[in-house]
Length: 608
Image (cartoon, rainbow, N blue to C red; front, top):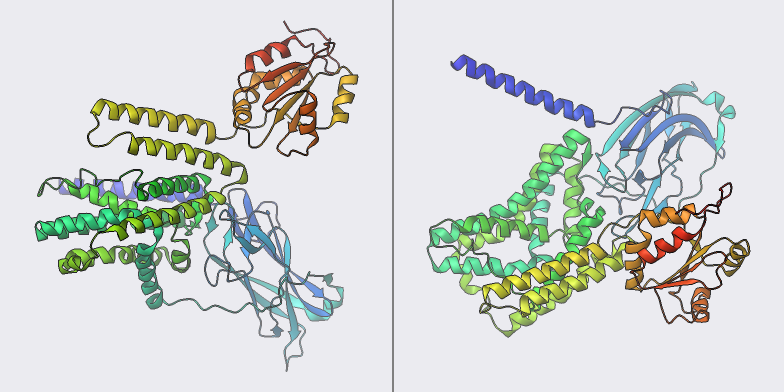
């Protein structure tokens, strides 16, 4: 029986390892790009983005050398400066080595600016570019031909993710006697003439204390402060009871912090082993969904600091003594505190994360968990030394003023996060933030502990419905532009009317909320877009955001007081059809259906 159990366990282990190997092979990118020659080495690939390099002899001015010809897609980029690279030493570096030749310093082309999702401008190389290595014959060497080894290292990133750091080596044979026939290249000078200083890598004995310090500093980040009163309150309450339970609950809170960093370490291992990429601290900010969600969360926390909404300790935490019901709540609170550190801890953790990603995945996991230990250390000290709690400042008016001041800091951070969103989504998130603040105010001001349960539930339902409705209006993914709107041009409109072509003019403005509703309720409908195309109607977008625009002047000529207004000019009608507000989809569809199909080659029959 024992042999059967052992055999079954071995079979399961083999199947599990096979599945992991299969998953890694399936997700592993192909080794080379099929469009390049076999002599070309592919450096990086992620989804549809790739970059490769090849060596060829070349001349730059009067100097002979080797040209490293990089070819790839524009979004995949290498970093030009150590100051703006994800970590020290991750900038693109090229070094040559040869027993026969003297290899000079690499000459890089002029970098260009890439704006990341945080709005930071970084210097990168991308697409097709050339790096030049000057070569000269070494002293006491008479032969002109020999081999050269070229080492290339750095990290490649796209707009979505950073790949694993790489270090590649290429070999080639050159004959300096043939340099007159080599092709001539010209590189545009660098934007700065400062030499890039070599940055030595950290040792593990320096990096791990740095990671611990980074985690420790996270407790000072403003984003974490809203939950600190809950943490300290819980520790103080437990200290008044049994010492053993106080220590247990406090350490459970620390476990929640470590659980968050364990999730980061696990995600990093999966990305490294299975997908061949790395978890860079800041990758989450490349997701507009994450950035917007964190900004809205900070707005809610700021309102709680202002006293609009009181965040109480969860009932699971304040469970009866000895019941153990408070442990799950303590873990959740610790996990939340670690999550809240992410918007403010970008600069604090960047160096430690950058070092970790250059190491083996196991060392990287240890470094990430060390950050968690640093963040959890102060609370572990508090619960292990209850005498320190008596030295905490006593509550007073200063604490309330301090909390309100932190609320303004959180709003500033929220605005910073919103500014990192795509420009087309910033206003929508701001509008929704105002509605969300109103819903939070409803929950805090319309109810209290004396409110009857029915009314409390009713207020919650109304607030939730309002928030969901506002989310549908402001946060829904923008519909694809089904209609090919033309810019407002009176001459184009007059020509179309002279040819008896129907014209549809949409008067709108960026600040007009009803105009945005009309976009979703009317012009995002596929049936209306299809009718506009079938009837060969000229769609014109008349933007009246600027008072001095020609569209605004035309709106006054038509005698319309404001936007939104849509004017349809059917052929043969003396007066145009005017539609106001956002609720005219049925009226517009009826009018479009009556217009004959006047596309070239059509019979002109009306669609009944």
